[in-house]
Image 1: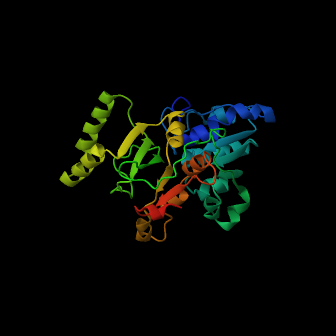
Image 2 (image 1 turned 120 degrees about the vertical axis):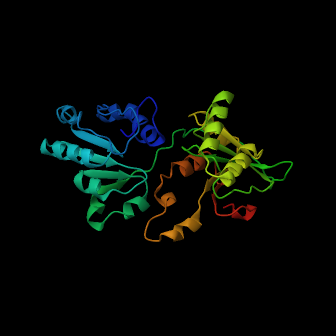
Image 3 (image 1 turned 60 degrees about the vertical axis):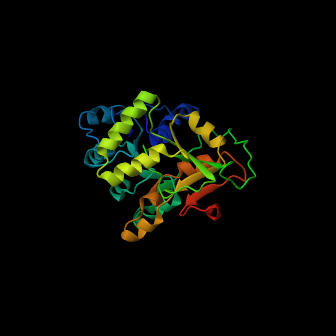
Length: 289
């Protein structure tokens, strides 16, 4: 796995840990053969290669684990007739796709970025919806105003210290960011001091201060229940995309295009046709789609 089972990052939780309880019903006995202390895409597997090769397995899945050590493991497993699957959500690695028996990606777009000769080895399996039974019941027919603003939610795995793209929020919009934030007041203050110390230059410190003191922005820590509560209490799900940066290097796919679609599908899954997701390229109400 890419990250530890006790503190998994989203891709490990969604693609691996959520799936393990379901596999026995299909005649598959799952086991975790590599549970890293810290997340790493390119871990040193030297100490565990022999144990994995000799573990009497039929298939080994590498969840975004790649690099020289992973390729050595794949080669050793192939010698023993053990199949390998490369499971990846937000990057393209033709070398791993070539060396493993199969690869699983989360979007058709990601699959299209692999060379033609590898297409037959790559399958598309979209990220699973974790709370399929939950539906947002909130209904707001208003257009938003200063006194009755619309509520938007941004879900991220990062600790944001700015609101991407939407730096100047309109008066009719309040935003809740659900991300890697601290729980207690003391912890939040300690992190704020660290962020200020890390900000380089007076302009960066002023931007951070404006962000932290903006009453239209609320930052709360992610948890598997709270994130759905916040989405259900919101009118709009936003996914800010900074498209002007795409032109800087037209030969490289922008990061937002190769990211997992999980944050979009989890918001879409909560509502009916009237729920909206906002790919923000501006800041006016006409950007809602």
